[in-house]
Image (tube, rainbow, N blue to C red; front, top):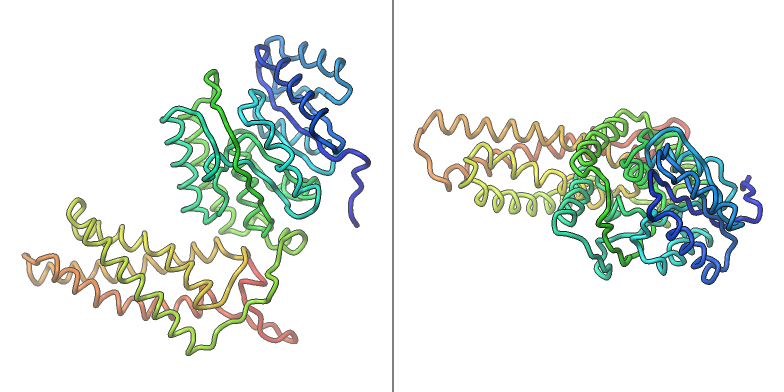
Length: 408
């Protein structure tokens, strides 16, 4: 049954902590903009995280002044706490939040919420890293932001570009389904929500934004970065263990492929695996030769294998074994890394054997030895990918079903 949200289309939550200097001006600007530009019904909620300055008094005055402005007080700090509390109590169809400094140009608000009001998308986020985004901020914060999002995409295999932009919205039914599984209540809250959403097959819409850095920002960048890294490790472990029910969320809300994937024949798998293997071997050889100078043979071998392993697993998943969609994606990447460790042990052993036979070997001999070892490791890799990582699970009475479509 579709939940009823009454007549309220949009609720925007503005988390605040000791924001007496900017709160009144920002909320007044936001309310004026929504009155003039937002055709749907709306509400602003100021979510106060245990402020100790004049923020509570100002927020209370604003809620009396504007009929569409509300105020909630929490005795706990944390952006995640504020959003969880306000979103859980909301009766709006679409839930959003933005930073109180209004760093993001408000003209991006209508396109942010439009695909959610229409039902086209499940979550909508602003991105400062889009090609047409216009961003004004210092080089240090630019570097940290891009590095964090690059790390996120490489380790968690996600496609959204900007996890931490304080300008997001999601449908209320999606929020109510995801929030119980988001553990973080601080700055990592956004990232964890988005990872679970993408792993569950939800559609995430991105819009480029114009964004001006707040010079008075009090975010502890170093501490936030450490908390985010710990959060990534925790979420990765939960996905591997299956403690986050992404399959159940996918079955309820996820976007399935328009055409069911077809698993290639065994002969087709061999041919496709061989093509992927050729590309991976060339990439490995190129990386090994580049890395060997600064790192040495063993370290270069490990790094080259690691860098090619993630791409190899992704290519084999879709191209060789015909598996698409988010279900079991992260688990299969983890299993692919286990297979990578086996391949690395085979190739590193070949180097150890070569060096024990001849103490003085040149780079071309090492590469030839590693290539031969890689051929052997590739055969083992194909067998493990087929019978373990991307295996077919047979269910009695239902025929053959791809394991990636039925389990996490």
